[in-house]
Image 1: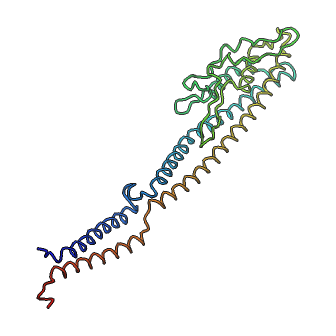
Image 2: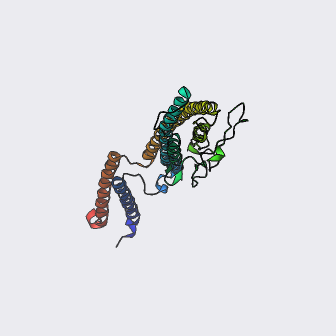
Image 3: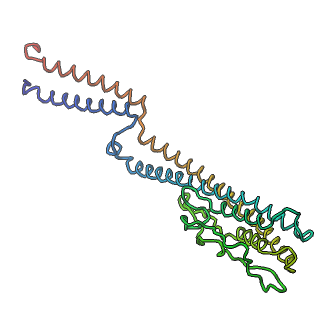
Length: 314
């Protein structure tokens, strides 16, 4: 039982003991978790900044995750376009052979080669990644290229004096005109999509269509003019597709640079978060030791007060 005269001293010592025990528990939790507090209340002064930095970090992580898919699609697009070079080379070789002497070497089946190359181009431009077509614009569930009857000739200017043709992407293209884009960082939107209606692809298909539909046996007296036009088209196609490749390559580099900048910003944010949340282990251990010493002293004082009597005092 505590005497009336000792109540004040006991309350002070008890309060000190409870405070020290609380601090000890906090320090033990900090050392084990390596965090200053287990909730925002424990770091109330820095909580607003912490929430802001955590939000920024999560947003940057999401950009990096989304940009992985953008990078995969652009590289897939680039690979498909690169594969078209073989088709361009083979068809241009046929057209050049015809321009030399008006005939092809024995055993070369013009129509058969055109059919094979048409199928190759369809396959390359109908590439899918994760179930979405790369060359359909926003209609990612629609197969973009379905060539009609290649033996049907495109429309010539007049078919008598000139044999130029106009673009007819509707002959084969089933997608839309939307160029797919993505937000790759705060305030940065990049257009990266390519549709199969791109002029370089259209000219390639049109040149094959001209070659496939033209009779080179001599029955068509204007076939050399048509072949020349087809050769011009495929040369234009080659230049435009090369330009397209360079553009995609530039965007891939832009995305890579953006990702590096995001990673730098994310790591900076993580450093700030760590400074706010993280505990200084050496300081925490030193304070823990100090509190343990204080607690032991408080216990000792409590014992002495409890044993204090008038007889002992006299």
